[in-house]
Amino acid sequence: MLQSPAPGAAGEECLLLVHIRRVVGQVTYRTCEECAEGVITGVIIDASFRDSGLGTRALSHLRSRYPGVTWRATDGHRLTRDLLHRMRIPRAAADDHCSHLRSAAVARSAG
Image 1 (tube, rainbow, N blue to C red):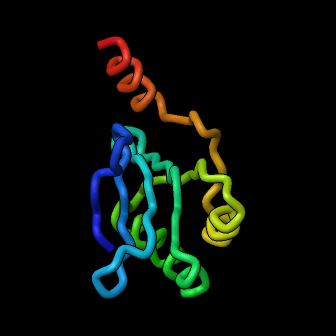
Image 2 (image 1 turned 30 degrees about the vertical axis):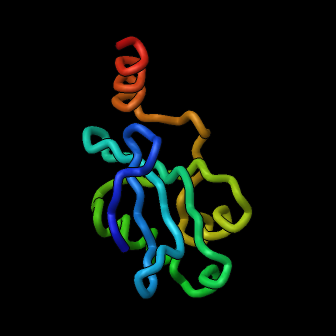
């Protein structure tokens, strides 16, 4: 698993899931350290790795990397919903941001 900024999404990060030097999936997310909230915005896993436990390991990795962060998710795809349900990560609205991230987004759009 490799950490990377998410391409094209301000404030988002990406956890790349790598198997034998090949990216087989990614988890995109954003976190706010001020209010200890995290939002998973997308989970993509190659079909051949969907039943391998890779998704569970990736979300467990995020939880260990950001201890004390409360996670929610906006991704509504069926496969992702099942994974998030198993991991007990509640669903959030697509535009759901903490007040700190909303303030930063408003400041960026005004500037």
